[in-house]
Length: 562
Image (cartoon, rainbow, N blue to C red; front, side, top):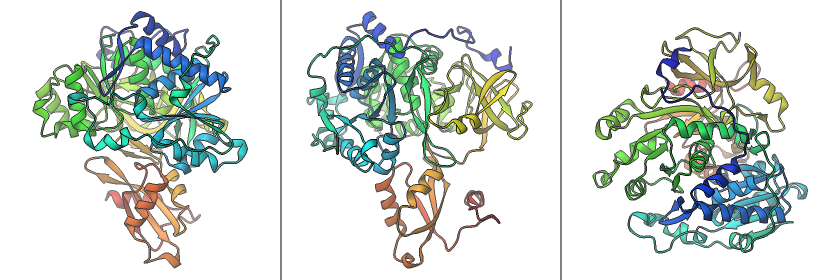
């Protein structure tokens, strides 16, 4: 027994027996059990489990007809919508590997998403297709996409949706527009409706627990983003564990606004709900009034979020009009929930905000607060089947209670390694007491009850409203601007987002006085995902450097913090 077991949910075991099935089997089983039950809800239109299964199988057959084979990587670039769920499971049914891509990524970022996993097939929405095609066209012929399947929001939306189910008026043009299909150099573009038009032959599924299932990308202190190899087994563990930890049943109604291209939304929302046979109410992006209406209309029971969403909803002038009494579980991560907001949730709605912690490498949660005994602004306790320690990052020795060190994690949810990066994989793991532990790069401490708390980071990373921003990647993209001689990206405090991105820039002599801060910020927003783009730019004559010539980013960060 470890200290945190005194607070362990009494109904739950400390570990789960691994499943001998694939993630696809979860959908197949739920569709047999609950064929007429609502699986997905999107602006008033409902997909039953039988319909979700049928469409996923049709798309899987089309992928096979296009040449997708076992283990092939298929890029999936979408915001939350029914097509994302259908396509995700179709790729798994084809025994292939999902490469989830942030829909905010621009062409420069998308090029790496195509070339590094050797993806030849991609599925996206009409509003993102042109950018994806542009990225593919910029690659060498051997590295380009061969097939691009494009869907429109109009393919699935109920045009008559009104009242509580209606999208915000500001979204009308974006959701209603039917974009022309782009051309693809050396490849074929196929409309979603055409891809699902006929029932093609579909071979039997053969992927098992050990097969690669998902290849999400995560950045780091240096270089380009790395693919995290997750098998069916690693995701399956956390899908089931997330479901049972939150008192999950088939009667769950989950508000899915956390992006499902991201590991948290993908595993803790989508896969957990499909495993249970529960209902997902989908939101493509955040809008507090829509969230309030959907919770009320569909009697949402479970809502995983980032704290800024809760803060925003509670600030709505229409809050009293929304019926939030159906909520029985609310929680999230990515940033600490302010204590005052957590207290208001408890006093006004009787809800304990359950915070968790995890990384792409750990299939989201490696730690969660017990629902009945959460601590505020706390990472939680090691998750089901998980062993976590705090070690000295230099000596690799475990540290006693209260001392700050690096959090390391061992468990069935930990990824297999970095795609095509054996050296990075070796550096990411250590062995303790005969077990393989992943080095998180986050500094934390454990209290006398076994709860973990974040204290600092070893890795250089910015947390903007739960989105991880890696300065090295932003700097590499900024260096493409002809006016930039040097750039150093650091975090700046933001009362709403927690942290925002700041760039300290040295301009080339010929451009000084000719390029303004807002002009550079606008350029960055055109060439990288908006959440990565600097919100603040500071021009300086020189960056501080060490004796070896390295930019002293930590000195700039400390000055900013001061």
